[in-house]
Image 1 (spheres, rainbow, N blue to C red):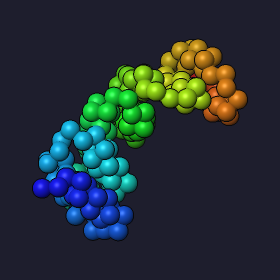
Image 2 (image 1 turned 60 degrees about the horizontal axis):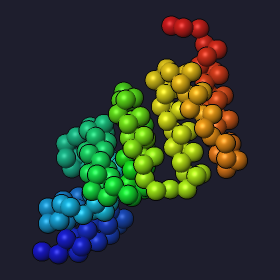
Image 3 (image 1 turned 180 degrees about the vertical axis):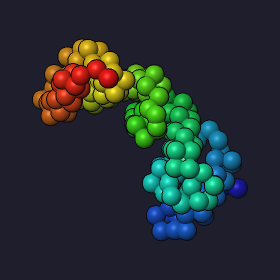
Length: 174
């Protein structure tokens, strides 16, 4: 009945196999202690990385596995509202969903801003907000978002995204 032991064993099996045991043990850890955010996060990480094994084990498509991981990341972020890593990983996972649910992704990145972090990390979130806006076709909003990025540590990210926006702006409307 030790949730920590199940979580630790699950982590080990996620690294060495078999993946089935990792999934079973993460599930058991969460069953025993559903309020532990790190178990939810760890299980999401394992599903994301071992997505082909998870797909086979659960009889799911890759997108369904990503959705399952997204739910677990969401639980972790909700259970640990000050954990910036959990909020970041939740928001980051939206990029693999097809089609990208723009509004949900924007909300996740906006929620990540509420977590304690450095100024550089905050600006990286601004870059992600701009990226999602660009992908949604909101190019002027994406440009405006990037005006908040002033730290030299994020200059390359900002420049790359500005180039991507310019490329989209130069394409004729479809």
